[in-house]
Image (cartoon, rainbow, N blue to C red; front, side, top):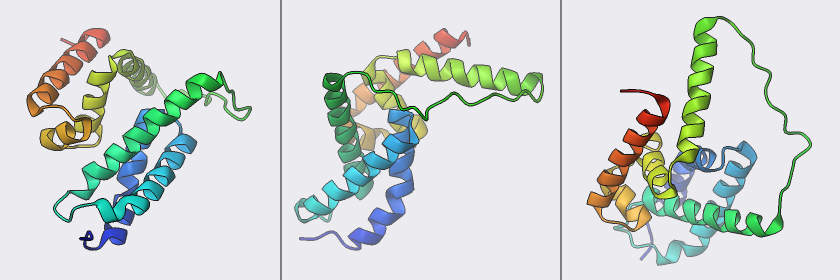
Length: 164
């Protein structure tokens, strides 16, 4: 049984896939590669997809698995440095802009310091706006575990950022 309107739904979900890929990899070029891998794998496996399955969680699981595969592969490759990567020059437009930039940077660092299980749940629920049930389905864990990991992740972030 085939999924109805598969191609159009897949195209409509590509911005969400890119956003999630960007949150995982923190690099636009890697996020684009992850979306491409996801689309290729989804098209190859579309005949195995049940029409009752929600497409977005299925695609995000494919993207997440592609990211895990890519990360494992890159660990064995060693360090690679792109000569075109350079930190963006920060322009200071005032105290508020500087404070916001510092808070964003601190938040990104704190997010990266979270354990992988907590970070995955936080990214899916808070950034991708997935439901607890969809997040549980994507990660293959119970819904209650999603809620407890999310609570621990939020508390850990607040503590690392000095927010009461």
